[in-house]
Amino acid sequence: MSRHCLADGEPETVHIEIHLPGSLRPERLRAAVRAALRQHARILVRQAPHRWWHRHYWWELTDGPDRDPVSYPGGTLEEARRRAVTDCPPLDSAPPIRIEVIEHDTGTVLLAVINHTALDGPACLRVLATAAERYGQADNAPTPAPVRAPHGGQGAPEPAPSTSSWTRPA
Image (cartoon, rainbow, N blue to C red; front, side, top):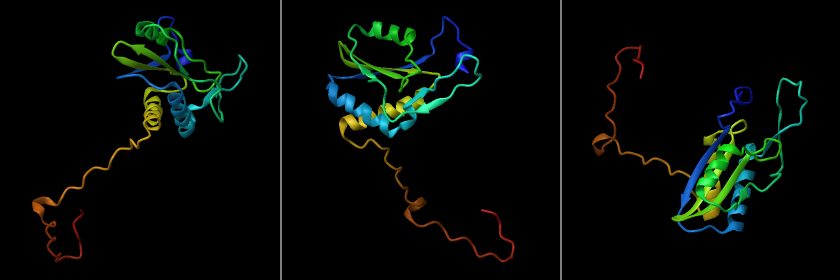
């Protein structure tokens, strides 16, 4: 749909900024992102070759990334933001995401740029959360909600016995 509604002044990307204190180890980050991509295989997609007269687009899953999605381009955060709006990740190579690592005054900024034709923000956030889990080597799975004790600290009152063969719905 986004391919048919493009306007020259509007980007077809989604970008997510993650501000981190300190710096990251490049190879550890790349390994964590590769592991996250393998775990969320739907992100390893590219557009299948097609002819200009075809009315549909097809996607093909790949076994791994066609290119390294993590880059260290240097420059300022403002330049990276400008690239996020103007330079869309290609659809003909998997994954349709680019993660730029920018050294900033307060630490490190990860700027994830997604081609919105292929992915949306929540899907990218799941991949980034998995990459953070792999990088930190800790389980970041949400904990189950605490179980509340019955009201008043005692068990629920027993229902009165029914005198009719018809019972009320719960």
